[in-house]
Image 1 (cartoon, each protein chain N blue to C red):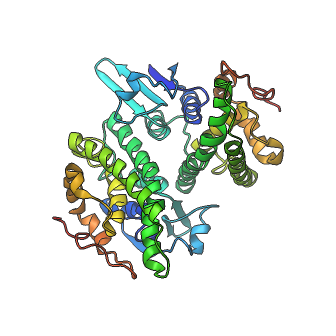
Image 2: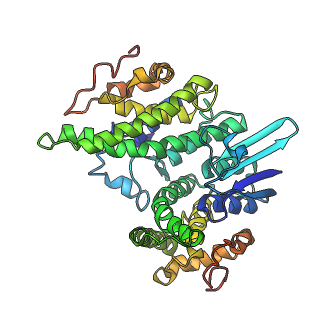
Image 3: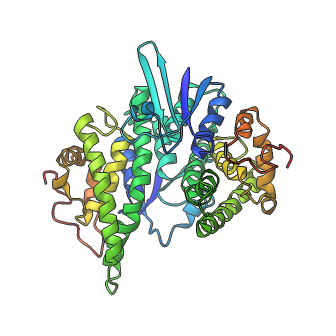
Length: 224
Length: 224
């Protein structure tokens, strides 16, 4: 069985949990704090970080770190259900958007999400309001773009659910824990999120609770 | 035939040119300036940018934008020669490093390379020495990491040439045009680069000439 090292509110770890679950791949989830990573992660390769998966079958060991390596691997060894469209241009579009989401949301994660987590775990610390403002502004721009895709296409890369959707939903679900997604401004994206959020693979994410901070009231509601 | 839109000194476009050539995929290269992109790129998808490929076979059109979408597509439709290792852990490692190179070199490209290009194309402008300094510092750190991999593994992800090598070589070749890679400080990486640079797929890159700026003297030399 795969062992997954992840930190519950890390968007990258959330994407891997969603994809493992969608693929029906059983796994043991080991929470790993970004500021105190497990030794086994470092043993994968120089600079490896969570999310990381390790499996041992007899003498054969498989290890991978990062959403790209893990999810493309799962798509290759567990092609059914497929999370990349068969149509070659839609397939390319799913990978382009997945890359876009990861690069574009990095700024939001590094400012807004990091600041929220620090705000709750170090109570004596004043939140950096400039960082929060910058993250919220970046998030608004990304949401507008994603809303336009959801409106015209149904799912982000086309008519078929793909890794691009799971990447975007993983990021937004982490921001949503702290109530930072202004859903009412992006109605088509909200409808898209309600569909993804209702999938069985999403349930464990909605059950996540940070010790120091409860999520906003609508966080786990499927009809919000 | 594929039409490739690219800008000659863009590391991402360079990677795609290398991979197309390694795969033996014939293509027509259309130089496209980042500051004045072609209309056909925008027609691929909202927010699509170069490098981008488009092909039309009768009524079937294929289009893709970005190294990830294009190179994974080529690996799927032209699996021979393979540029991802067969061993599953090495395969995951190649994808992890490819991602690491693209994310890690972004800072170098946005500072050092951009500044060099501006320096040559707008002669009336003073280069931003703080940006150059920041880019050079970031590059030194990345080179040290890559040198350690080349020393212990031969190729970056293991004993087999992979997309991780082409991504790294594409980036370094663009910085090397302006003489910004201190090869003597990283002897194992230099030996690795000499091997990659000698491949036939590299020749077109070494023949690139920016109208406003000639490359440093060793740029196209295979033994430098």
